[in-house]
Image 1: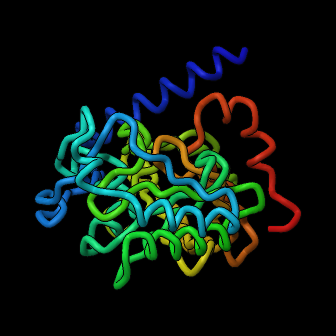
Image 2: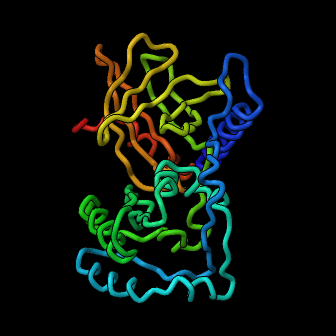
Length: 284
């Protein structure tokens, strides 16, 4: 039963992804990110085993600052296997909202992300005047202050240096979405795709069926092709999967009709938890 459920998810996602690639009648083209020239021209230093910079809590930050003050970029560049690559060869940096925000800043910049990433849905960039150590300290302090208990924060990139192994900045272009919106006749799987301006497009085999626009904090507005009014609610970030933020979305329209939406979760997670997660939470 479980294997059949997983195979069904994979089959639906494959069909949707292929359909969005070849195009369908009445559908928009793929919204896969177009990398700007300013990003394309940037180069990032990568290495097989970069120094791991993780703050488990605020008490770690002073020691991390001291460590970063001793960090020698030339020594990192001289490590065996270290090399420069184009920024657009690092999918999460070039493709995600968080990564593109980092690359849009001048070299005085640091990108941090919650850890473990699968349960800590935060990523932010600190830039401006100050040394790399000072910027990292500020970024880690902000990250920890905004994270849930039990989450630490890790430096992902510093200036033009990737501070994690390359495989940790993978990024899925089309991701799974499980929707339940009975008033719209929707109860199944979609593909969610992010546009360059952060809008999430929801596709089925016929094309775009809806979109999600983010507001302040966790607020979202959902519109659907077959709905006469928008749905408003919140997106609850859970953590990152393959570089994409997994979220649980709950929204209602002015008539009280509900939409529950799970975005970015892996098939095995959906097989186990979709029923419970799609149920309307008491605090929504």
